[in-house]
Length: 67
Image (cartoon, rainbow, N blue to C red; front, side, top):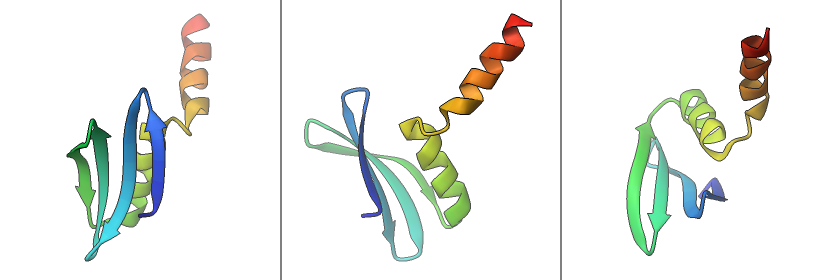
């Protein structure tokens, strides 16, 4: 497991297994695969946007809307 985060009351995990990157959502012990890729950069970017680490982009969009 590369990462684990709770987002909006759900648990999300970031895994690397056999050359594939997986993002898995866990709700009440039920696992659901949200994303699967061989590309590490694409998978990491998707993981960061999912857990909300790139909030700066959202703030920039709001500033543009106000203008």
